[in-house]
Length: 276
Image (cartoon, rainbow, N blue to C red; front, top):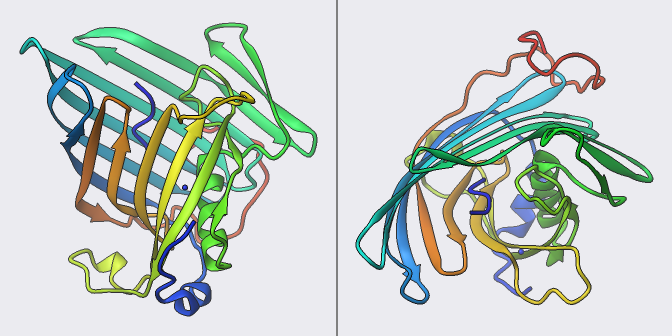
């Protein structure tokens, strides 16, 4: 199963207000209830789950922890329980990412990837520790997850209808993926049960993830969400091909920044150091 994380025409509602609002990605503790919204074919007849998405902002980096539990009812009536854990450390400069992905199905590990990726003007490289010794090259312009989110929101603020940067997040066995992000509509701040979102404009985006091959036609995975200018998302739609999940934001808190300054610093130092 592809990522559960968390894209030319549309209504440009509140575009001036959106442009005036700075893009400032913050830490967050968000919980989503997952439910089945659409099936294609007959292999899946039901699905329910929960997604926890936590981001900690420090002086130099963003640390992301994502935990998903999904229960799927199959055509024969049997149940499949999938648990995914995805953890990253991403420098604010956007040049370094460490990642760990574990996914199990009915208690048996199905996927495990771990490594470090770095980028520069001429491209980048991924050095895996699991599987040990694997090395993957990244094309110039590759973005890591938080940088990708920032790039989307900055493009929306400029009124751009779409962007198509390559992305590496550690969840694909094919290295960097091609992403096509359609920016469908922007709107002013609206009333919200979540206080951190009530004063922020937002934008609806649709993101397709493709293997980097010349003849790709259909995305391997597709997601749609409403992004706020602090990086929090609502109304999440996760399209796996044979079924689609809807993610409803049910709980949200914004933790204090673990650094008195908003400055970005160098990438040196261990990702697990609590002072970082």
